[in-house]
Image (cartoon, rainbow, N blue to C red; front, side, top):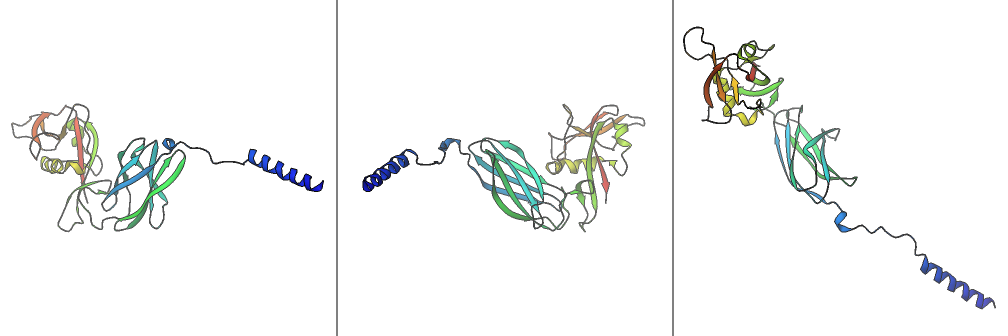
Length: 246
């Protein structure tokens, strides 16, 4: 009798075990898994900035950011665009960096609530000032032979010519020669224009009789390398760029 009871018990355990196999892994459809890769990264540095351009491949909703620092990742910055769901090119601009300094950086993606680091690398900022660098509350537009002195430009709200000529603190309205040089290197300065107006004031008056109330302006999108020189009424509202020396 004991033998029969034992066999029956074993039988029950086998049957019950077959009916209760325990927890299983969830069945996640392959199409719901978001895969993010960054096959290409390009880094451009100045004395105080770094621009990171990345190609991001993804098959679903993704956001990315950059974490960076000197020997750590204590700072962070956003890419533009920050969130997307298709393959795209994203750019991040890091500012207020130290000259001639090595920075660690890593690119972080977040998809379906899961974080993943895709790139871990470094860059070194420039040791010398360059045209286009952010410096002294402006952007360098000229340097002397020493590379230590020059001028910076800064964009101010559009105004009439009389207001622009008053300047603002250390800032003065650019003359026509400086404006031509700015136009020549315009890709470095990220200048914007008011809707429907591509013209920038200069402090240079055109030749003519005394009391002529015109000032020279320049078209920033068409014309030869130096732009199109024109004249306009001082009461008109045009774009304004001022400069300061250092």
